[in-house]
View (cartoon, rainbow, N blue to C red):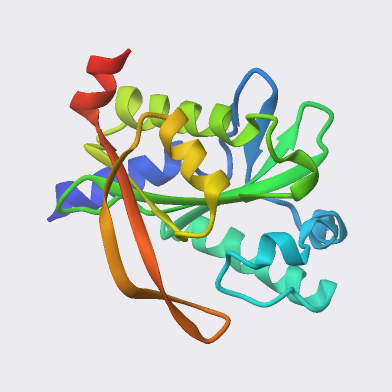
Length: 195
């Protein structure tokens, strides 16, 4: 158990407050409290339609959320990261719970502001996360849960070679309604075989 805890700490340290993942066009890093207004400006009804919250109703709520994100990252629980362009324009978010100690699996989620849909930013970031998870960390499988109505998210899963695993009925609650959830995944073996 001590070794498993050590693995989790190394995993979260690799994706922690001091580390930034970079792609050709994007930077993934944990947001600063000073970026509250910028994050608030990103949330619109098109984005929140597929998420577990209503439109975030004020910047104070966003500030508290960023403070919680930073605290949980310091405690090795979650890695929430904002996605920035190279000029530090904030365009979206990724989140990853800590590495599952028993299975070495992670589940990821993401959203991106509608203005940046269709430009392959999320695909590019997910490829970087896959590379880091499978090549540099102990991750065995990456899982992605998808709202069945979210066609853009399904396209990202397909572009990144995540295979459809099935649908669980009424698995997720969004805006107080239970909805079906589709599951996608890729294993380390599949990833290494593809590349």
